[in-house]
Length: 239
Picture 1 (spheres, rainbow, N blue to C red):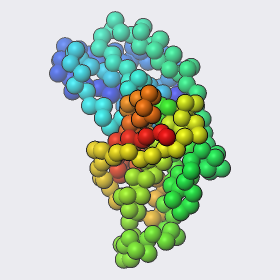
Picture 2: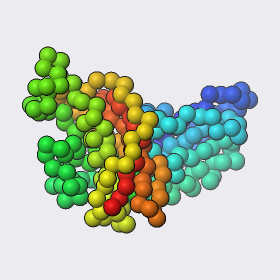
Picture 3: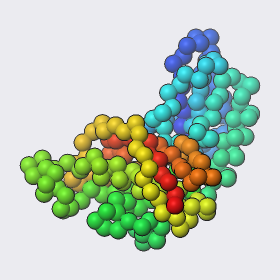
């Protein structure tokens, strides 16, 4: 199987005369080095196809950890060649980084016990980041939260997501060396408990950027075993 996966998200099928699956199969035959798979919320992809059956953009996309510029709308066979060319463009234009703990500490001002990112497995500066955190059962926080039923606090889960967003933003040249200030947290939802010993996956993707004011809005998620535990929209002020 090809190593590079392109996510696919289908609409609800409101146009029954439109064969969405055959359209994707045709594109797959044109790009045999890629694998087209049903998109998983929270997973990072170099591109996601939004396969719609009509002109109404009704497909759910708010759970995707992929920036809007890499969500490609495709509606008919006439879109095949432009879509193929856009995917190729996205695959070649990205500067992808990985970061170890020392590199993370060289970027973030945070330090233990308030540093909640262990490593970064994929980072496109100013666009998206995929990071990891091991929720260590030895952390002192679990003595009090809670003594008989330890759970990783939601406020620290939010902090871990925010730090992942910090790394994504601060690796962009115009924000290098600036301090990331937490300005706003919106649309936050906690879906599953995070227990001690969890290997937490952290995701951040750019939603909005106002470079003139240094305000950046990020869509963030925390996952365990590819299941969403928490999500939020985090606004940073770069100062």
